[in-house]
Image (spheres, rainbow, N blue to C red):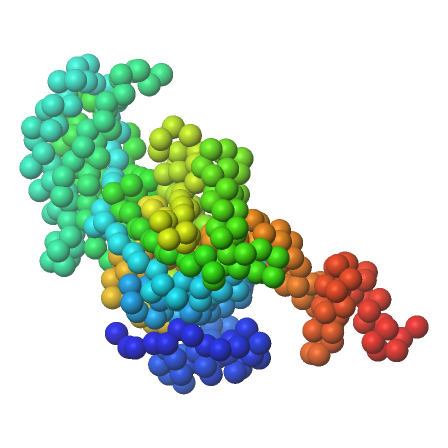
Length: 430
C-alpha cells in the first residue's frame, strides 16, 4: 500500500482541476486515471448496455473526495458518489477533528454470508431439522463443490443452521442456512449457486419440497465496526463551549436510541456517509441499506445503529456496528471503470478493510449531523451549499455564483426568484 496524506489544505476552496491535481499527487494516480476522472463519459455506452437491460443512456452523479481520514493509523482518501450537499464536507470536517485523537479505530468479522433454502411440506419438522443437522458435513461438502476457486483462496461453506417455523400460515416450514465465507466478494452469486446445488439433497433428507434458494441481505455475521474519540475542546463553537456540545450530542443520540421516528432520520445520516462509498466502489447500496435497517431492529424495536457517550475525561466517544457486505471482485466493482478507480484511490487490501473504512465514514457523517443539530441547527450548514444549487439553477456562472450565494446566505433568503433578481442586479439588467 502507498503512504497517503489525507490532509489537503483548502481542498474545498480549490477549483476542480486543482483538486484533481492534488488528488493525483496524494493518491499516486496516473495520467490515465486523471483523464478518466475528467472524461465526459467514463462509462462507455456499450459497457453500460452489458451491465443492465434496456439501456438508453447513462445518469451521472458527482464524485467527491472526503479528506482528513485516518483509519487504524493509515491515512485514506475517500471517494464518495452522492448528490446531497454537505455530506462530503461534513465527513471531512469530522475526520479532521478525529485526527487529534488518532482518527478512527475499526474491526470486523469474517466475510460470512447466509444462503437460505426454504423447505415446505415436511410432515415431521422437528425430526427433519435434526436430520439436516446430522447430515451437516454432506451438505457442506456438496455446497463447496460449486466454487473451487473460492476454496482455493481460503473461503467456502463453513457450516449450516436450520430454522424451524411451526406455523407459517402455509404449514410448518424449515429454512436451512448455508454459512459461507465469501472472502473478497460480496457473495450473492456464490451463495445463491450453493443454495441451488444442495436443494435436491435437502428434499431427499426431509421429504419436503424446496421453494426459495437465495441469499439473505441481513449479513449479521459480516459486521464492520468503527470507534472514535473527539475531544470536547474540539467541538467548541462561538456559541457553545465544547463540554456543552458533548452533552447536547449525547442528548440527541439518546432520542434516536429510544424513538424510532428520530432513529430513522439519525440512521439515514449514517447511511449518508456509507452509501456514497458503496456507490463509488460499485457495490450494492440497496443490499447495504436493507441489512442495516433490519439490523437496527434486532432487539425488537428500530433504534440507532450508532452510540454516543461521554468518557471519564469528558470527551465524546462514538461507536458504530452494522452489517456491511462489500466486495472487491465481481459485478460493477470490476466492470465499471470509475469503481475500479475508486478502489485504487482507497488502496484497500481486502473486502474487510473496505467495510471497516466505510463504517468509519458512516460514523463521521453521523457525528457531523448530530453536531449541527445539537448546536446551530441543520439549516445553517445546508444553506450555503443549497444556495449554490439555487444560484446555478437561476443561471449564475463563474464568480457570479459565489456573489449570489453570499448575498442570499447573508439575507437568509435562499430562493430561485431571489437569485434571479440578484443576477439581474449584478448584470445591470432591468
